[in-house]
Amino acid sequence: MTDTMTATLPVLSFLETRVLGVLAEKQRTVPDSYPLTLNSLVSGCNQKSSRDPVIEATESEVQAALDSLKSLTLVMETSGGRASRFAHNIERVLRIPTQSTAIIAMLMLRGPQTAGKLRINCERLHKFADISSVESFLVELAERAAGGLVVELPRQPGSRENRWTHLLSGAPVIEERNAGSPTASADVTVGEIAALKANVARLEAEVSELRVMMSKLCAELGVTVGKN
Image 1 (cartoon, rainbow, N blue to C red):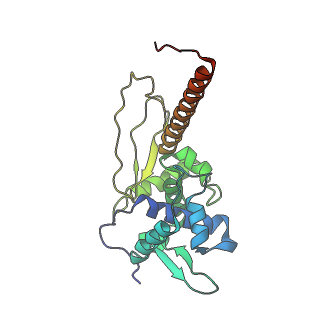
Image 2: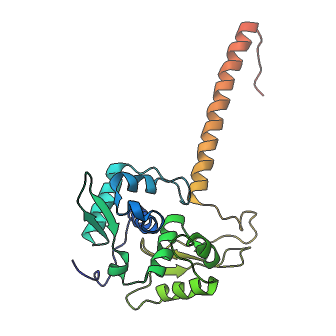
Image 3: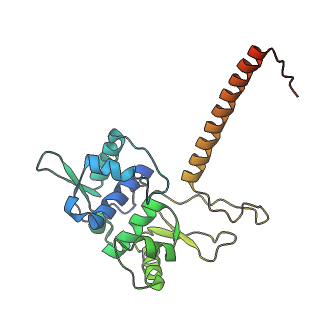
Protein backbone atom coordinates (compact mmCIF):
# COMPACT_ATOMS: atom_id res chain seq x y z
CA MET A 1 0.00 0.00 0.00
CA THR A 2 1.41 3.39 -0.94
CA ASP A 3 1.62 6.33 1.47
CA THR A 4 0.63 8.90 -1.11
CA MET A 5 -1.60 9.10 -4.09
CA THR A 6 -0.51 9.98 -7.58
CA ALA A 7 0.58 13.56 -8.23
CA THR A 8 -2.84 14.41 -9.56
CA LEU A 9 -5.69 13.57 -7.22
CA PRO A 10 -8.43 11.68 -9.10
CA VAL A 11 -11.82 13.38 -9.21
CA LEU A 12 -14.13 11.51 -6.87
CA SER A 13 -17.84 11.06 -7.45
CA PHE A 14 -20.36 12.63 -5.09
CA LEU A 15 -21.18 9.25 -3.53
CA GLU A 16 -17.50 8.47 -3.04
CA THR A 17 -17.06 11.71 -1.08
CA ARG A 18 -20.22 10.95 0.91
CA VAL A 19 -18.80 7.53 1.84
CA LEU A 20 -15.48 9.07 2.92
CA GLY A 21 -17.27 11.73 4.92
CA VAL A 22 -19.40 9.16 6.74
CA LEU A 23 -16.36 7.04 7.62
CA ALA A 24 -14.48 10.06 8.98
CA GLU A 25 -17.53 11.21 10.94
CA LYS A 26 -18.43 7.86 12.47
CA GLN A 27 -14.82 7.20 13.47
CA ARG A 28 -15.20 10.07 15.95
CA THR A 29 -18.89 9.92 16.85
CA VAL A 30 -19.37 6.13 17.23
CA PRO A 31 -15.84 4.75 17.79
CA ASP A 32 -17.19 1.49 19.27
CA SER A 33 -18.86 0.67 15.93
CA TYR A 34 -15.88 1.70 13.78
CA PRO A 35 -14.76 0.41 11.26
CA LEU A 36 -18.21 0.30 9.70
CA THR A 37 -20.08 -2.55 8.08
CA LEU A 38 -21.59 -2.00 4.64
CA ASN A 39 -25.06 -1.81 6.18
CA SER A 40 -24.00 0.86 8.67
CA LEU A 41 -22.27 2.79 5.92
CA VAL A 42 -25.39 2.79 3.75
CA SER A 43 -27.42 4.08 6.69
CA GLY A 44 -24.86 6.81 7.30
CA CYS A 45 -24.91 7.88 3.65
CA ASN A 46 -28.73 8.07 3.64
CA GLN A 47 -28.99 9.74 7.05
CA LYS A 48 -31.73 12.39 7.16
CA SER A 49 -29.95 14.69 9.61
CA SER A 50 -26.58 16.43 9.17
CA ARG A 51 -26.60 15.72 5.43
CA ASP A 52 -26.94 18.07 2.47
CA PRO A 53 -28.31 16.90 0.17
CA VAL A 54 -30.24 13.96 1.64
CA ILE A 55 -29.87 10.95 -0.67
CA GLU A 56 -31.12 7.37 -1.00
CA ALA A 57 -28.11 5.37 -2.14
CA THR A 58 -28.52 1.62 -2.59
CA GLU A 59 -26.25 -1.00 -1.07
CA SER A 60 -24.81 -1.86 -4.49
CA GLU A 61 -24.06 1.81 -5.21
CA VAL A 62 -22.24 2.24 -1.91
CA GLN A 63 -20.33 -1.00 -2.52
CA ALA A 64 -19.23 0.29 -5.94
CA ALA A 65 -18.05 3.54 -4.34
CA LEU A 66 -16.11 1.54 -1.74
CA ASP A 67 -14.43 -0.55 -4.44
CA SER A 68 -13.32 2.61 -6.22
CA LEU A 69 -12.02 4.18 -3.00
CA LYS A 70 -10.17 0.99 -2.10
CA SER A 71 -8.36 1.10 -5.44
CA LEU A 72 -7.13 4.58 -4.46
CA THR A 73 -6.20 3.34 -0.95
CA LEU A 74 -8.55 5.95 0.51
CA VAL A 75 -10.54 3.13 2.13
CA MET A 76 -9.30 -0.04 3.79
CA GLU A 77 -11.33 -3.24 4.20
CA THR A 78 -10.85 -5.45 7.23
CA SER A 79 -12.22 -8.93 7.67
CA GLY A 80 -13.25 -10.68 10.84
CA GLY A 81 -16.57 -11.51 12.36
CA ARG A 82 -19.63 -11.99 10.22
CA ALA A 83 -19.21 -9.00 7.91
CA SER A 84 -16.43 -7.02 6.32
CA ARG A 85 -15.73 -3.61 7.81
CA PHE A 86 -14.41 -0.45 6.24
CA ALA A 87 -12.21 2.39 7.47
CA HIS A 88 -10.96 5.56 5.81
CA ASN A 89 -7.29 6.26 5.11
CA ILE A 90 -7.60 10.01 4.54
CA GLU A 91 -4.79 11.28 6.76
CA ARG A 92 -2.20 8.88 5.41
CA VAL A 93 -3.12 9.23 1.74
CA LEU A 94 -3.68 12.98 1.63
CA ARG A 95 -1.09 13.69 4.32
CA ILE A 96 -3.29 15.96 6.37
CA PRO A 97 -3.84 16.16 10.15
CA THR A 98 -7.00 14.98 11.90
CA GLN A 99 -8.19 18.59 12.28
CA SER A 100 -8.19 18.99 8.50
CA THR A 101 -9.93 15.64 8.07
CA ALA A 102 -12.75 16.89 10.31
CA ILE A 103 -13.16 19.96 8.09
CA ILE A 104 -13.02 17.97 4.85
CA ALA A 105 -15.56 15.48 6.24
CA MET A 106 -18.06 18.22 7.10
CA LEU A 107 -17.69 19.78 3.67
CA MET A 108 -18.32 16.38 2.07
CA LEU A 109 -21.36 15.71 4.25
CA ARG A 110 -22.98 19.16 4.39
CA GLY A 111 -21.77 21.06 1.33
CA PRO A 112 -20.22 24.56 1.26
CA GLN A 113 -20.02 26.29 4.65
CA THR A 114 -18.48 29.33 6.31
CA ALA A 115 -15.62 28.95 8.76
CA GLY A 116 -18.01 29.77 11.60
CA LYS A 117 -20.49 27.11 10.51
CA LEU A 118 -17.69 24.57 10.12
CA ARG A 119 -16.50 25.21 13.66
CA ILE A 120 -19.99 24.39 14.97
CA ASN A 121 -20.51 21.35 12.73
CA CYS A 122 -17.05 19.92 13.50
CA GLU A 123 -17.70 20.03 17.25
CA ARG A 124 -18.12 16.25 17.61
CA LEU A 125 -15.13 15.47 15.38
CA HIS A 126 -12.70 18.11 16.65
CA LYS A 127 -13.20 21.11 18.92
CA PHE A 128 -11.55 24.13 17.33
CA ALA A 129 -10.61 26.89 19.77
CA ASP A 130 -12.09 29.64 17.62
CA ILE A 131 -13.05 30.58 14.06
CA SER A 132 -9.55 31.84 13.27
CA SER A 133 -8.24 28.34 14.01
CA VAL A 134 -10.65 26.87 11.47
CA GLU A 135 -9.63 29.54 8.95
CA SER A 136 -5.95 28.68 9.45
CA PHE A 137 -6.56 25.03 8.60
CA LEU A 138 -8.71 26.01 5.61
CA VAL A 139 -5.94 28.22 4.23
CA GLU A 140 -3.45 25.42 4.82
CA LEU A 141 -5.68 22.99 2.90
CA ALA A 142 -6.15 25.50 0.08
CA GLU A 143 -2.43 26.22 -0.30
CA ARG A 144 -1.06 22.68 -0.15
CA ALA A 145 2.02 22.20 -2.31
CA ALA A 146 0.54 18.92 -3.55
CA GLY A 147 -2.63 20.73 -4.66
CA GLY A 148 -5.46 22.49 -2.86
CA LEU A 149 -8.16 20.38 -1.27
CA VAL A 150 -10.54 23.27 -0.53
CA VAL A 151 -11.35 26.61 -2.11
CA GLU A 152 -13.02 29.78 -0.88
CA LEU A 153 -16.18 30.61 -2.84
CA PRO A 154 -17.20 34.14 -3.91
CA ARG A 155 -19.27 35.90 -1.30
CA GLN A 156 -23.00 35.62 -1.89
CA PRO A 157 -25.11 38.78 -2.00
CA GLY A 158 -26.32 39.60 1.50
CA SER A 159 -23.80 37.27 3.19
CA ARG A 160 -21.26 38.48 5.71
CA GLU A 161 -18.84 35.56 5.32
CA ASN A 162 -17.48 33.56 2.44
CA ARG A 163 -18.20 29.85 2.23
CA TRP A 164 -15.64 27.13 1.55
CA THR A 165 -16.03 23.90 -0.40
CA HIS A 166 -13.85 20.82 -0.97
CA LEU A 167 -12.17 20.04 -4.29
CA LEU A 168 -12.19 16.24 -4.12
CA SER A 169 -14.97 16.19 -6.73
CA GLY A 170 -13.26 18.77 -8.93
CA ALA A 171 -13.62 22.53 -9.18
CA PRO A 172 -17.04 23.85 -8.11
CA VAL A 173 -19.42 25.45 -10.59
CA ILE A 174 -19.81 29.10 -9.61
CA GLU A 175 -23.30 30.38 -10.38
CA GLU A 176 -23.55 34.08 -11.09
CA ARG A 177 -26.53 35.78 -9.49
CA ASN A 178 -28.14 39.03 -10.33
CA ALA A 179 -27.73 41.35 -7.34
CA GLY A 180 -31.14 42.88 -8.07
CA SER A 181 -32.92 39.56 -8.05
CA PRO A 182 -35.31 38.95 -5.14
CA THR A 183 -33.69 35.55 -4.62
CA ALA A 184 -30.13 36.80 -4.82
CA SER A 185 -29.49 36.29 -1.12
CA ALA A 186 -31.25 32.92 -0.91
CA ASP A 187 -29.06 29.93 -0.11
CA VAL A 188 -31.02 27.16 -1.81
CA THR A 189 -29.57 23.68 -1.50
CA VAL A 190 -29.98 20.72 -3.84
CA GLY A 191 -31.98 18.98 -1.14
CA GLU A 192 -34.36 21.92 -0.78
CA ILE A 193 -34.94 22.02 -4.54
CA ALA A 194 -35.69 18.28 -4.55
CA ALA A 195 -38.10 18.71 -1.64
CA LEU A 196 -39.84 21.60 -3.42
CA LYS A 197 -40.27 19.55 -6.59
CA ALA A 198 -41.71 16.68 -4.55
CA ASN A 199 -44.21 19.03 -2.90
CA VAL A 200 -45.26 20.47 -6.27
CA ALA A 201 -45.78 16.96 -7.68
CA ARG A 202 -47.86 16.00 -4.63
CA LEU A 203 -50.02 19.13 -4.92
CA GLU A 204 -50.56 18.55 -8.64
CA ALA A 205 -51.69 14.97 -7.91
CA GLU A 206 -54.10 16.21 -5.24
CA VAL A 207 -55.57 18.83 -7.59
CA SER A 208 -56.04 16.16 -10.25
CA GLU A 209 -57.88 13.92 -7.77
CA LEU A 210 -60.10 16.79 -6.68
CA ARG A 211 -61.01 17.52 -10.30
CA VAL A 212 -62.02 13.89 -10.85
CA MET A 213 -64.14 13.91 -7.68
CA MET A 214 -65.78 17.20 -8.67
CA SER A 215 -66.61 15.88 -12.14
CA LYS A 216 -68.25 12.77 -10.66
CA LEU A 217 -70.23 14.85 -8.17
CA CYS A 218 -71.45 17.25 -10.86
CA ALA A 219 -72.49 14.31 -13.04
CA GLU A 220 -74.50 12.81 -10.21
CA LEU A 221 -76.21 16.15 -9.51
CA GLY A 222 -76.74 16.90 -13.18
CA VAL A 223 -74.77 20.11 -12.88
CA THR A 224 -72.68 21.41 -15.74
CA VAL A 225 -69.60 23.36 -14.76
CA GLY A 226 -68.37 25.74 -17.42
CA LYS A 227 -64.68 26.29 -18.12
CA ASN A 228 -63.37 29.82 -17.78
